[in-house]
Image 1: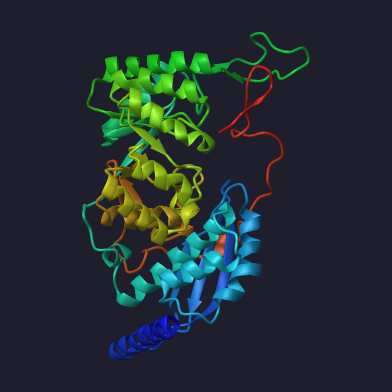
Image 2: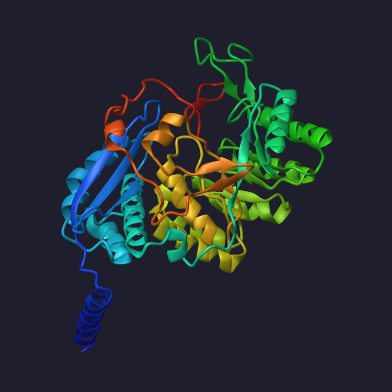
Length: 432
């Protein structure tokens, strides 16, 4: 009996959807083709874009599946696994297509699968907005703010250069600035060849946790002395600390009234956030490496972090991020989507539409692109005076010139170590 009722309910919903389209004079849509557009954008980017074409002539949607470390795998997954599943289905049914694509491969919450889901989801919202003649933020409930506040990235080789760069951003209109000294882990590196090392062992810059915990609070004391309390300061630890080191570091940063300290722990050690909250009021942001709800849901519902830092294209797109934002609202946590570095303009504009429409918004990460990218992706958001602005066009408001993208193919993966493979004095890996 229950199965009959469920089947009847589903049939009524499908019939109602068809009636709605008929009442509006719109034919039912079908996905007719799927294009994957990988590109370096004429620089060192590793971007993958998705283009969903529909049965309505000229109507298509754009999404981001970018993954700097696994771009070729994402391209193959879309072409071989997902495109055949999507073609012929209705792009109107965003939630259903998201859910069915998520279970289509049975195993869930992989990085590549999330990239694919995110691109699909953005493209479907883009299509729906274009067909409705409305920007996506209006479909999500409309604006709750006039523009999206950003935080800038200030780095420097020493304290004075960091202060100089923060001051420059403040003059441009930024109220929030992230401060690093020598990049991720900077302030905690013993120079190459220095210190006590194993014979014939690792000879490069070596991360030392105790040095980092001593030097970075001194940097922020210096910043506050020079610039006062007007600027809202952020800092990214990038998961380099041990759990006890993270607790100590959070305590030492409390006097400097941080806007937040980011990624103080690796995902494997998130249970330690409870200890941090017990001993300090330093605001915590976490989530750049998260892929599963099992990682962020306990931290949000337990009020163990203050900002969630997932990237929209790494967690399933607009649909998934909207659900996270609603959860945040219930527990007093704010969003700070991770949209810098290797991020692309399509993902950035998707975050922008979310940010305009959610009450749990906290801050958005700044990311600017060279003129060649704006040419390839017309509608790329603009940064002015510490705020992000879209164009208000229907859908996401961004397009892609395929000819330019395809003239700039993905570059081969570079060999050797990178910023993700930091090592300690004894040559052991320090996890990001």
